[in-house]
Length: 150
Image (tube, rainbow, N blue to C red; front, side, top):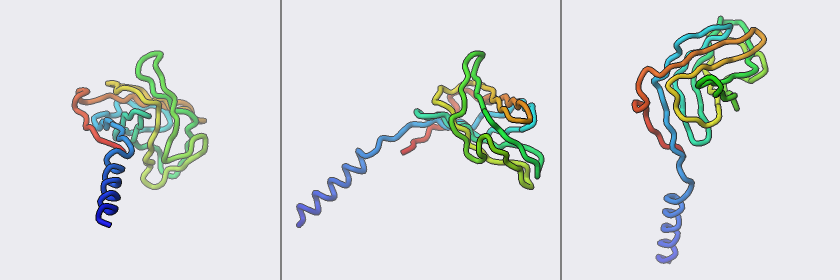
């Protein structure tokens, strides 16, 4: 009985220790929205650079009780180097959404995995036209926090 219990505990410890590998991610909170133009505003809060994707966190900004629609978002690092969005949480792509009383909607926008750029531009396109959001790091590349994900 004691050997069986010891064996079960050992197997459980090994399963926990060698289970799923952790993905390393770099969360950067020093990005700031520099310029915003177009019908839809944006304020960046952080960017997470992971092995499988890059996730941009922020808020869409608009006039309370009005509607908008976003059909496409592109992240451009340098001329000729652009990434199209792969997913968005907070609103539905290609469908109208409405700002409530505060005029802000929290969103998470996914792009393919990439290395951390010093600056980039987000371009959103919808029926109201194009919105450009210029984003720049306020600190050096080494000033970000490292986190572990399981």
